[in-house]
Image (cartoon, rainbow, N blue to C red; front, side, top):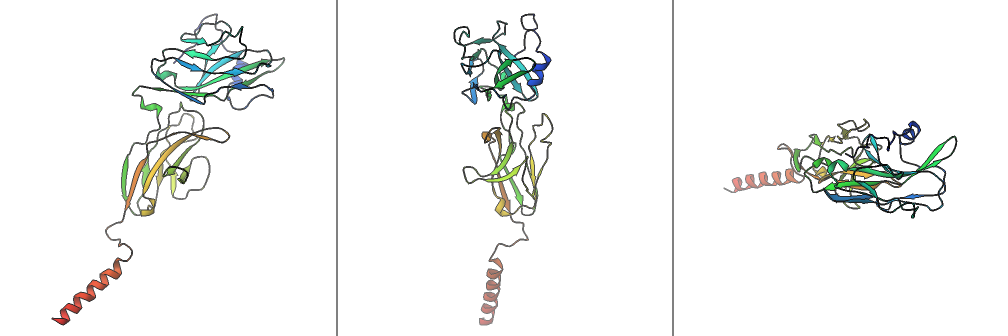
Length: 286
């Protein structure tokens, strides 16, 4: 994790700025834009990460800063006032190019996972407004840290008709803000099984506490199963937006629903009756 150096060259953030950063969604009424071209970037541990940011040329006076959001934590990553930030450098000299505020982060590690925001402050008395980029989620590959993936613990489960099944799902709290949904099947015709935010799903109940800050458990329980419920179930994380976009899916859990021993498949009684009649007929002939 990148820490802001405790030195005079990097003073603590003003309380007003911290208040502004309670939530990055939305912008002020300014007519300029902050653009982050990549919605997500994946790098390997030890590599150099480049995060793009462009601010409209006709923007008012005020600093540009970079922040990282990881769950409930928000951290200053870089500003362009000459302060020293280990491992972080600017791509272009903003004295000559006042629209490019891209940065580079060297020696990336799993601790750098999170969503990075490029924020333009507009200083005016008595208010300090801001415009934020949409955010770039950074994932770090080449490690065995499974905490940076949507996890579904069971590959397959087999249950009998009428029983209840538990489908586990763990979603890292470092992922971008957005809903988690359960689907049966994949592709455009997949069937929604559960939405933690809205909808009516009479046979499905959530197990965790999805509204609790820092929650990572999005497991569900499905009751009164029937053979029609056989299929592959996916826990899918979405990134908040207009509209929300799919961010990452779990590997899926294959569910088999079998009939119990006292249940007879459709058509079986008729076949059983015909067999009994055939047996009696053969006896009569003998």
